[in-house]
Length: 322
Image (tube, rainbow, N blue to C red; front, side, top):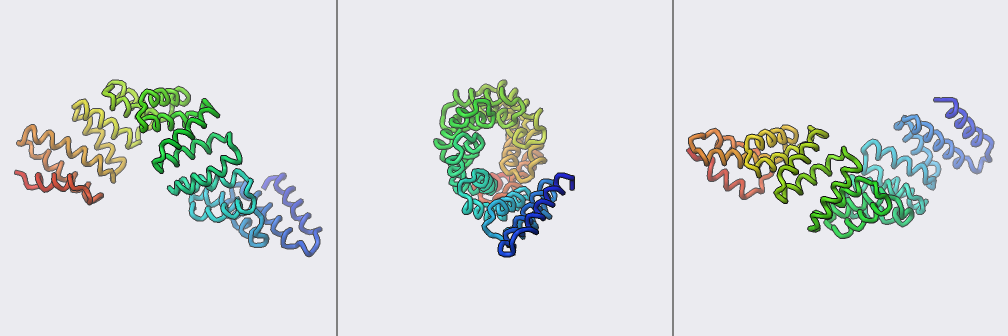
């Protein structure tokens, strides 16, 4: 503990010592809250948590202690445990922006997007120009399939901060979903211009180029994404789809095999790889090893997701072929 921390601690202790007996619990709560803040700042989070818990035991109306309990659980990854402390902090201090924003992120990470949106709306009412709130709201609306509200929040975000690459990237994805491919390409390019290391923008722009049969540009974008994040299974998968579309099957196989190595439960990649092996088999039925590989992959895919009638039909058709 450094000298500054010791001095703050002494002041807190002195404050508690010279206060009247009637306020003893309150003073002790302040003392434990102060200790918690010192320990938290020194990244002794378990010890800090104990102090904050003791503070709220002594004074359940200490909003900052509740909020710090939420912060510690959130940072430890115990997201469900973070919810109640944040809710209590908001109940006690409803005009505190940070409490609402942090609770919104917890709901968002848990996939509870409706609750996240409601919480972010309250946060944005308190701080309308906070860009991250708008970006996060957009993401949550997207996952709720409310694309118009998602796009509206993206527009507000880029109006507030025209150099926010995440907002531009999200706007690209939403513009693509709503059928405005020209706006989507412009938005992705702007996101990349602002942040040349934004993998998602390269992937999405490459995928959009693929839809437009601009295959060389698609490969350029996807290969840039691969250079930035070589262990990203989605990049390998999208490259495989591009190579497959160009009938460069050997390259597609390499990328799909890498996708499955990086993401062993990707049944969609297994099905795609099986389909390419079947192309080789149907071209030359004498090459039975391709049929066998395809069937093995389909079986693996069905083990991961049994409800795939088309895959099951392929297995029934080709499993016993000679």
